[in-house]
Length: 179
Length: 282
Image (cartoon, rainbow over all chains, first blue to last red; front, side):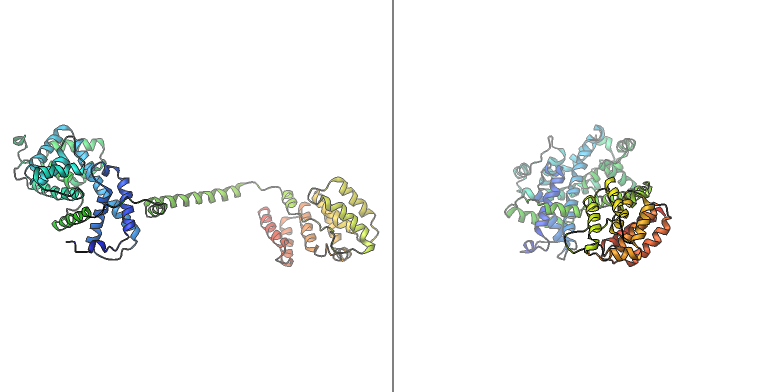
């Protein structure tokens, strides 16, 4: 899917309602704000999903936009909780898992490496989008927009997951060797 | 495999018991393929993976949004909160709660009404008594009857709203005793006072006299009392009930009277209401 010229301004939903809901649900899920996200990110993701769905009249528009924004916030909230819960595991399992994640993060391209390192492994965690953008720009020479970070992170997580699934270094087969 | 995913999912949602959580942590240490699943879930979650197209589209959109002027924070009006409530699941809970509350309220009301002891019949009688009509400045009275009617009315009417004091009763009785015609208006007023004083047997006799041909001829000729006949019949029924006549018999008379009383009259509604009340005593 590519964005055609002028498409983004020719919206078929009630933009004011979408913005209000994006703002409201973002505030309801307080964790999002503490993890470098903005209400505009929710609005942006909701707009993307609406455009992907295709131009058609929305039935029960208000309710649809409300649920869309709420679902996006809930998905992101679950993502943050997953990361937090992993850190709550007993230290033996946690350190082994983090070392596997670290191992494969190092195999990714520079942008993903820095982005995921800051997300999963940095101590203390780096949350400020501007700081992350400047670190990536400094180390990898790639200048991301701060509002595109969560999209980039999704792309990088996809790559990382594929790598772990394939396990080219057979870390899961010989865990003792790896340790 | 599916079972594994559900366990992991429950772990991340915090829905595992302490025991199940311990088992999961043991499995993580022992079973490396389980650990692999666990790590993959912690990275990807349960949201379907984005395609390359979707990611590219989002990058484009992010670029476009970044170049636009930043959107101001919306101000949420009360309309927004009303709409939001309307589309939330809380709405069903609130509506359900209100419905249950209303249902319970109605149920309790009916229960209380049915279980409450009935007031004594004399209280009902007192509540439904129809006052006698009074002389006022309008209209005229024939000279030969003026004295009795005027005096009776003057005695009865100033105390109309209260229970008639003993002196009123006595004064009317004196007037009635001194009546030299077949029927005097003092009988009409005295009947009402007797009824109000719960002297039912005497009230019955007096009301029956009012309804005799001489009585009606007298009562109906005055402009103040010419519509009194249904009220007298109504009061007679009350007096009979007070005297201990069967309620069923009183209801039959009342139904008969209801058919004859014009619907526009207040009395018609009172008759209907009394019928309902008497039904409980029947």
